[in-house]
Image 1 (cartoon, rainbow, N blue to C red):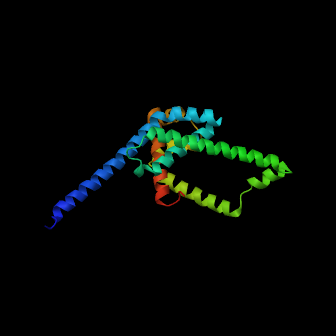
Image 2 (cartoon, rainbow, N blue to C red):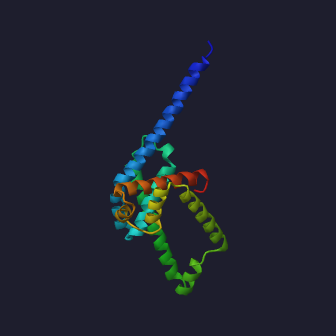
Image 3 (cartoon, rainbow, N blue to C red):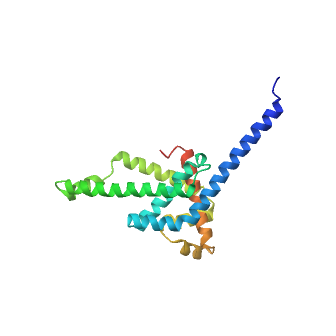
Length: 196
């Protein structure tokens, strides 16, 4: 007996719709969890790393890494994944700090070695400029208020309360703007194959 093409098309349409709904649910849940747990996550990372700026960077990078994998996270414990990702990033940062200190101690002329190691190669400069241009492009795609909040938080280093006061919105709205900007940049960066 042959298959009814209309029925097959209806089933395919339903599968696609369910997949899109599931992906949207994961995205919504991931954003909600990051918003709710961000304070606790920052506390944990600051305690672990000793520096608030490193903690903020690690928290946002943790969110972005999960966001990139969001299509594969359906049914996962997103809160646990967020904290495990953050813990792993913190471990990497601490390892990097230790290895940098050891290299400096082992060098014959610590100051000269330190200066040589910090000078970027021409290739690194070109790559960094290219990455910066891409990030500027992605930030430029954001809606004006979202971009303003994101730049104030990331570039100016202002806290949510100060940004909220300046923009005349709630602190919660600023958090949403920043989270939305991070999600947009991570998605677009991955689309453009910039995240390797």
